[in-house]
Length: 110
Length: 120
Image (cartoon, rainbow over all chains, first blue to last red):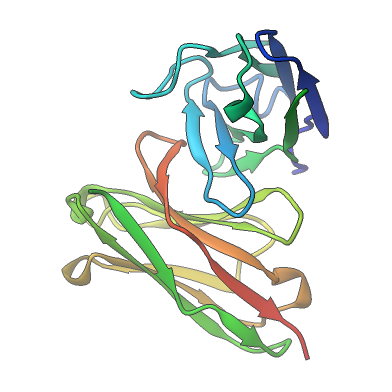
């Protein structure tokens, strides 16, 4: 099974919204509501931002939201702030007790 | 405070073995499922495998790239999970993170990672 497909980079100006896509297949993203998103700063461990497609853990700003349509999941960051500049990874359950990650998207705040 | 601390990384020759440890604190370790995830230099995240709680049977599952070479185990008396890596290849070079399942297939928190370098 291949990694999920994310755009290598995304960008936006402070205050704007940016959406990062995560494309899989009907065997992973499209087949289960177990899509998660992680934020990672350089040299640091990932942090959970979204789980079960659209749920936010306690402490994650509501500027972060998730959705899914068919085989593509999306992470939207609204009201971009400088601190949102990081790498973002999606993951999805892929059946048979297997998990796939996306290749990651580097978000730049212009 | 919930904390995960990995150790055991280092330089190993191709074909060699290494065992990583992940010591947990700040929560009831016995009940949680644990996963290992790795990140090659400059690359994305890759799920290695998981071990469920001993109460749940202690079973393990692995990703395709490591199946048959890597083994995950746990010692609840030490609140520690292990990753035994055998027949190491240069492509196994990565930072290895341990992490806790807070749901079926999502993880939080993560340890700081330990670097494994496979090279002659």
